[in-house]
Length: 361
Ligand SMILES: [Zn+2]
Image (cartoon, rainbow, N blue to C red; front, side, top):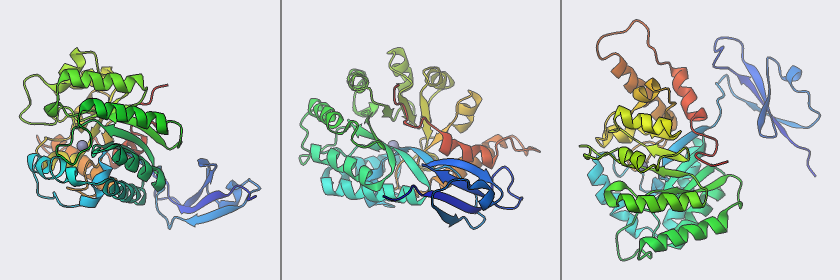
């Protein structure tokens, strides 16, 4: 039997003291066990250890992408110039219906590896290419095979087309319950969750049912509310609030057209917002709600959303969010001090969202 192997990362610079001499960092049992100036002084264990030279780079925890449709890695870049409606027509209501379970496996697996390669170690995968039970199994198995930590959010959105095996919403819900029964507890890195139908494709009663199904199974929930413009007169977040459906088990993507009151409803419910700057700005959803969330004392979280229209690099989203927000902060004139720092933003993705987003208990 092998002894446990620690990982000693040497030649590391720390964000709090970037101009000091590099130090080292010891990882034991998957956790940071020590941080120090010299390798020898900090390594007190008897076990073997591997050494990784960070080359004077900064070490940060793995980032959390709180909103990504991972299956779209195999249609990367197709939507670089598309509006929201063009994206919906070509991908969601277009190619999705032709995706086989193997396609979903490939997209999800490659997409998850791409995230790991870019420093994302946890994702809320809004998996909404569920054309059959085989598609659901494929998406789960691909995440599990990649080694990423994930909330596998089973998409309840209908996918139009004759090739889709589910003939009714009830069949989708029954298959979700099968997935929960099959996979609960199978892999400690994967949590099954629910991705709600989009409000423009369904009604409040259906959403109420989907939320009840998720809560009965005690799994986290994610949804796309408040992204369309012009805003509908009722306001999705307001409807969910008035129906008493918002909760701390939810991550709401975008919320770009949400009013201040609606964001307060989200905050008071203990729910989270995922900002996906590049998709939101390309597709006309509006500016990311970073400033308003911070004003309300909420910590923004970040997501890539779809690599069919943008890079899978979450750092790029963080940079875009930072500079967009700074542009907005300066819009009435140049400030002497910038109140939003790179370090502030770097702290959002790794620490944003619960470790198991929305998980109860
Ligand atoms: Zn999305």
